[in-house]
Image (cartoon, rainbow over all chains, first blue to last red; front, side):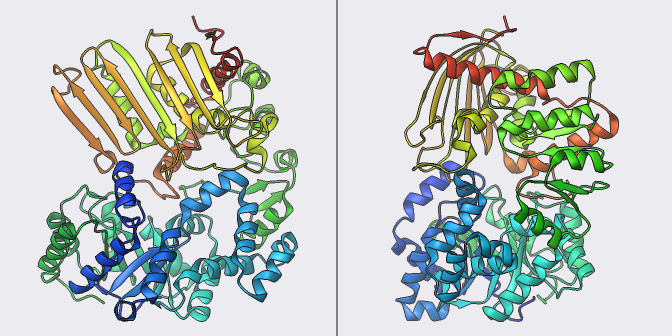
Length: 301
Length: 326
């Protein structure tokens, strides 16, 4: 569901949570640098002072600490919109490898302590699993979003591993449920991360779902753009879709200037997620965005 | 598979009724079975994908082979190498397209490293260091993976088989193994494994692996090979070549390839392009009735290396020769 007031620049969470898709060694280094929440808050304030009003946050364990800290700082809280990305997929994959998927779901729910509905679910265990599978999904979403309660949540993104699985298996019902759940229960815009933009747009159109807000890769080297960079660019130009770009620097492979020159040379770009790990890095990134965004050929929809 | 052109998942078999109910609800056109044999008997299928606990891989693959249905079976091939003997015999008697899901062979970075090695820029290979770690298990695990009869072993068989397959792909068969395994959290299976390998080619080196090493958010492979003319380092993120003298079409000094340098787009990416490349390779092999590089005999050799590590460890690290490799 498209947003009329989507933030044009959104701070990414990966550096703060020790995630780097191009270098595991760099990820570990950043994990150590941002282990104190103060370091993250400092970067959020710095970004806000440079006009950034949005922040993406996965449901990584550290997100809870960041969210708690934000709640204690009303000025910062009021000036930052949060875009959760759920679930924190690596956690589920590791746990599923360790104890199997059903045990992961049950343990998650038991650990939640989320009031009557969920304790009923925990008591019901497998019986509940049998009764209403979509309800389980709803409960898991509710649990994943708990840390963000009280924050200004604008849109909730479904992780690309789940979105793309749903697209490939034609799980229309899951998408409809997610749509309903996020927009009605959480009063936020349902949104989708994907590595297959053309396929998502095609399926949403076939299924009659509203214009999607999509988080997807755009970069001049075509990294993680499927089935091709050209096909993604064509979809961006022709389809009724709102796009937040990620992977613009191809995980640090590209320099900010060349990366944003490409991005804002596209027919349009609604928003971009940027990962910044130091203030110097943030400054050069924001400067490159400002320089090229002003030259964007068409207005953002 | 379902996302590939002209490929459709038409039936699924699983003993878990809840899972089948979920499939029925969400994918109304899909035929569901609680037993794979009924599926094979009732459905007209061109190929099968086998994703089951390790001890069921061979029985299900054999049932497919008996019906001449090509199959892609998940790794590792089986709990013990001898378990695969009936399948190897059947495939020798009646060849059939078959593949084992060692997907690193389809990862862009690892494919690039293979291309570099095939050009032989390093000269005589001297020494190998290879590790695979993930921060996954720090208390007793639940389920079949920790039951040695079902899984065949712990981190060595379940995860490090990927690394061993990659090393076999790069450097050929292993002739002799000396190994040590250790459990810290698991009762029946190992959480740490270390082995000294002597390849048939004469190359020697070690592997070290664990699923209980902190700070590895996702599984990470590191391979470092020293040769007479330089070094090659392969990780999940980069391939780095250093040469004293130009060779194999590469300059002297450092040459580095990162993921965006070698990225090959896919028709649909679900959790990593390597899975799509693997599935597409298998489907193409079925369509054209051609062999797949990573097949049952190849994966069987990996199981023989793993067996030898356990046997050596039980014998205090004594070297074990692998049968059929001299």
